[in-house]
Image (cartoon, rainbow, N blue to C red; front, side):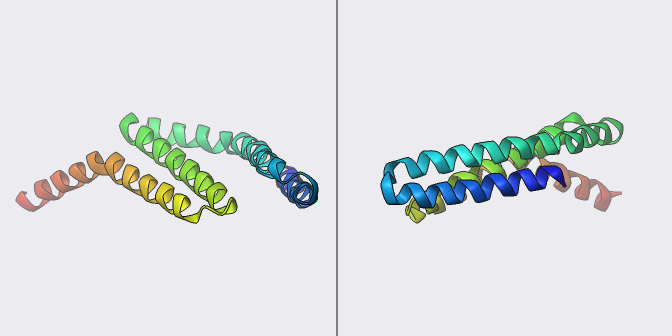
Length: 129
């Protein structure tokens, strides 16, 4: 709960600073916004560390390391492309933001191809049994 309050405070204060800066120094708004996003994202990553540790224990016990690697890469791609897209949209470049989202989706599909192949092989084995 304390971390959520911190993130809300950072977000609201960043938004207020951006509104004030927009009136006086419009060119500083983007860098201020990015600084606020990075700070909030850092706190969010610190909050997620216990989740990642728990996921690591689950995958050590049941699934292979390959699946854990794919899932963490997919999460990273999803977050990065979403944040990059939103920053571009905030700057008024929604077309670039859409392209970033599309590139992220394609990269996720390419990343998951080995999983799809494993599922198809498993289905073939089950059907031939």
